[in-house]
Length: 319
Image 1 (tube, rainbow, N blue to C red):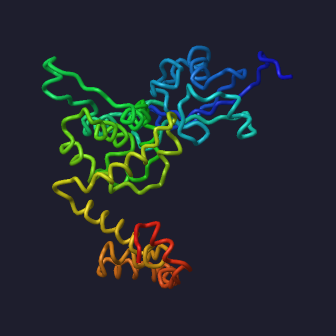
Image 2: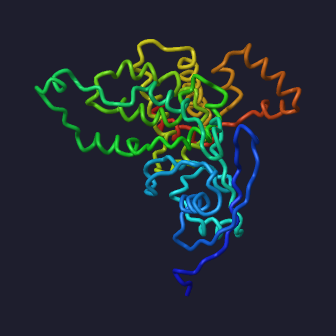
């Protein structure tokens, strides 16, 4: 049986950065046991070997979110990661530690979170109660079913891991990002909130810019599932008073998918694309696919599935 006190030497490779030297890698060796968190690894390196190492960390309780970084290439909370778990998972005593992607590095593992906070505050991340409540003349009660809907999405700790792994944030500045949507929907769906229309206007256009890559789903340390809040926000689009072109295109895309499955039982991607974006846009992209030798994929003709009537019944069609 493995002793609780048994120790093993690990090699920690840290991707460092400062303005004078730029980016470089530095290795450290130390002994760890099966209880040693990566925050403790970094603390010991800083206190025992190299006081110039810079990183953020707080209470070691996997809640504060300040120790978000890349460990062995994976976006993680250092406080929630045991060193020997990584050794066993990767069958190597070498562990790499890097700052989060997307954010500008300030020093070593510390990144500039200003852009993240700007996106978060755009969604007005707090409850706006009624005047009666703020004046002390009433109170808001939350039903158990509403609490069950909101609780999961209220667990976001603003660590930024989902944003660091999100490709849509990198290419579209109008996309608020998964964390902002998780926080925004938590209040959009709260029946006690009084700025529903304003909040929906903030969130709706951005929700249709998500690419559904599910990276935020994969890396969230609190299992918040930000992509789920984006899907749920899209379902509120029908209540939007003024719809942007992005929202209108998104709604057309959903209807085209629905019609394709209803008519054939399958997703006819070429037809869906033309219906969503129009013939002119489709021709432009068709030329692109021809140049890249992928035109044959766009010309595949789908056959209807058997018993299509059963699919139509499931979709509410009694034809």
